[in-house]
Length: 185
Image 1: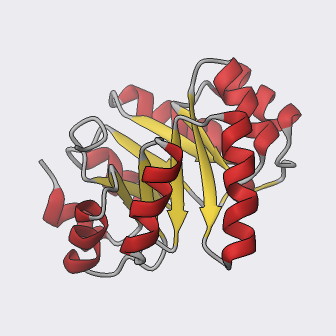
Image 2 (image 1 turned 180 degrees about the horizontal axis):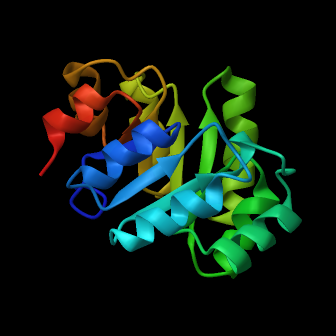
């Protein structure tokens, strides 16, 4: 199973990678590491090319990652979805009818258990598991929550992508353009 027929969700980090994404066959991508002033132009350019972008709220410089920021992004910029570690951001995305992707860091057992509690409350549409190179944890998160999983972080090779997908990930987020090309439609 893939997300909208995509094994890869290209991660856009700057204008150059945005152009690469816009020229690709992928419909969905994720904006990482950007400034608030860049986001409207990125989304406008994507929409012009019939592409959809998730915005990683926690990685936008110039905006706080809270429910007010999420409200602003949803009302003003209308991205395809929001990615965050924050429950309030995920709840606002769901309330506004866009994809809500809860980011879960596999730091230790305690962090994972606390994340499960948050996930149970907010019920995101997807969970992004980081690092995405731990197949048994991808499988566990998917089985324990019943929510589709994206794998991200430290994905460096075709083998990493394949292992994540075999473990049950719906898609893999990566900024590695060689992987975008390998898995493009």
